[in-house]
Image (tube, rainbow, N blue to C red; front, side):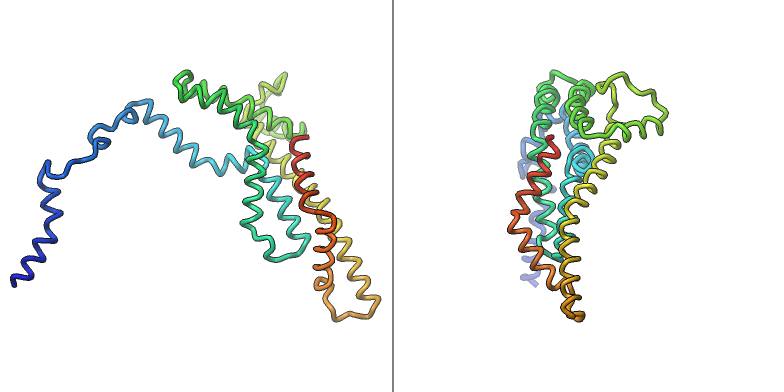
Length: 246
């Protein structure tokens, strides 16, 4: 009985300590939250959380990530290698290529909008207005006029006199449509050499009477040999980067 009483007392020690005020000192950050408790700090925190939650959508819609990952997916399909390279590797490569290409735009946005806003020189609307021009320039440089006209006609909006008046609500979807078309054109160019190799291998096997031998079994090492001999990774990365920056 005495043992049970001792165990109960030990278990109740944290509860009694919490119930007694002043026995456990609370951190000063909880007692006096500091500058984040003000309206500006709370608003900045809310904006930061909003940007973080929208970051995947921003990366997919306002960068060249879609072009890179679709082109690399076509490359994997053309090589007909089921698990090499893994999808995670392709996504990581596309992300770092995107970061490399978008670094100048991110620097302009930081210098013109984010840094002045964090320093208190701009409010939210001013920061958004300051961040729009470099993003819009990047998007419109890679957007077809036909895609812009499509969304202007669909929204029944008067077309602007110059590119500086194009709103992001039209520039972003038009850019995404142009990027999808461009990425599929790149994918077609990537697939054509592998298709030729498949046709040649199938024709050779048929002429030799090896009808029971699957052409894919012979075509895979041939395609890998040609791809490595031509330094395919370097050629594709060079073409993708020149296409984006060109």
